[in-house]
Length: 129
Image (tube, rainbow, N blue to C red; front, side):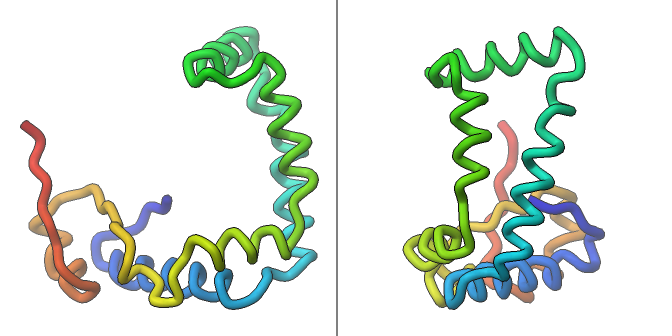
């Protein structure tokens, strides 16, 4: 997910596609993976600064039928990831054609985005009921 100006929407979508393709072609840099893991692990505590945040998270996990120790499982899982794991997931799930076989959802003012989105491919407008 990203946010950008209307005028750079197509450029950003193409950049995301390029990054996804690169991840499918070769593993990411091990240092980048370690830095991302450290950032997630070290920032994890900031999700639980108040009793309300803790209760809210636990309620979310319960409504998703996750185990009561989900937080521990999640953090341990994140810390065990390596560059090859990431590459394997991307190469199994991302076609080398990039976004051609995917659906990209763009939310915004259709009139302002239409010309940008047509640079990428077919546009389907979804209107709320």
